[in-house]
Image 1 (cartoon, rainbow, N blue to C red):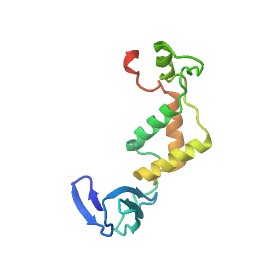
Image 2: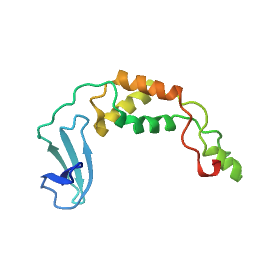
Image 3: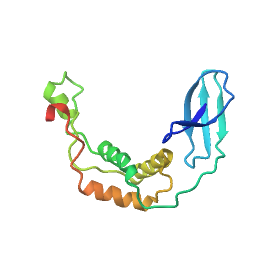
Length: 151
């Protein structure tokens, strides 16, 4: 298992211990631990003991915007539902794949977003700042980009 510095493409550390190829890796929300799974049917827990400089708490970072856009898209309802009783027509399928209206979400949904941001390296964002930005984006939400047949 290798840890790469994305900005330079340099391998900064190699972790040895799996007999087979690594098939999955999960990073803890605080970036202190990595869990890897291997084709040798083992899991290994690695402590990432590098010198990490905490960027400090912040209300928002524009680099997190794509996560909020995806969240808003996934929480915008579909325009129609397909009937289970019969074969749908093409127009019905297109409508069922089209999202319309404004996004809605629960507190649990929002907490999942905050957790996702933490796992994506934005654990230093304050939830109240994320909520404020999410509400601003939702107020101006035009919906996801149009599907090919809508253009």
